[in-house]
Image 1 (cartoon, rainbow, N blue to C red):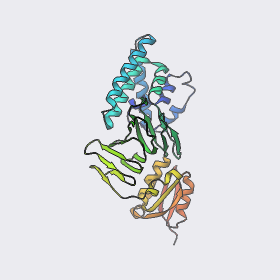
Image 2: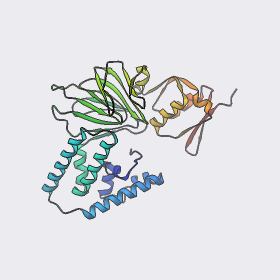
Image 3: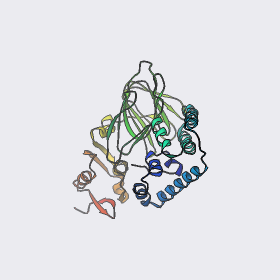
Image 4: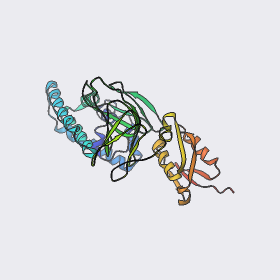
Length: 331
């Protein structure tokens, strides 16, 4: 499922968008038209991305296959060399720029195949939890509405790098060379050799919980922080800080559960939005600050909302595709 992109250039890194644009069945495939129809902003981004591709195709030169391969390999080698040291938003812009240049050089569906072979992406839809095996044998369990980009080089001895957008639990396999496994978030990098840990990079929240082994957290600004099993580290807006948290609560999503322990309803709503991609409004500040405690399944929104109503404290109203939660009128 595509995300809500912010810039037209980002669409050029989406394999399904490029397949739609360059593919022979573009007119018959109305998926991207439907995606754009859902929002004027999406429609403008789609039109701008198509315009960029049209302009690039008009300017591209006829090159031999051998020249294209050499140019592509050289360009990605330079970009990958820089991607190790760049951080945050700039790192993402480097890859977007690389994708745009590659469209100019290669054109057509060949670019899609080359980019796919070099940088794999794993993604989950709203309400979906899945487990995947990475090229080195390490395993990752991805929470709903999450995306993971893998670096192109997973050869023996090289750093294994991934970029997380969402939430995932990693079980990293240690290599004979003890090569580093690096998880990049917006505000810090998690550097390990072999361990188990949970990482969140979503909605302005960046944190890591270490389950087993050892971890070094390298912020984009500031000093590194070493973690031991049971440590929970989060970005507090100014730097890294260790804090206490119940691991069962944080990792309940792996068992398809949501565990609340005196959790403010406003925080619960944020979790639901991330999990299901639905719009929920709270009617009144008083219920926003009220708390709930309990365990519910996280793979069925209707069941969760019904469980909320059974407390007799809340009433759930569905209207015009929106959900409103308000204080119950029942005595």
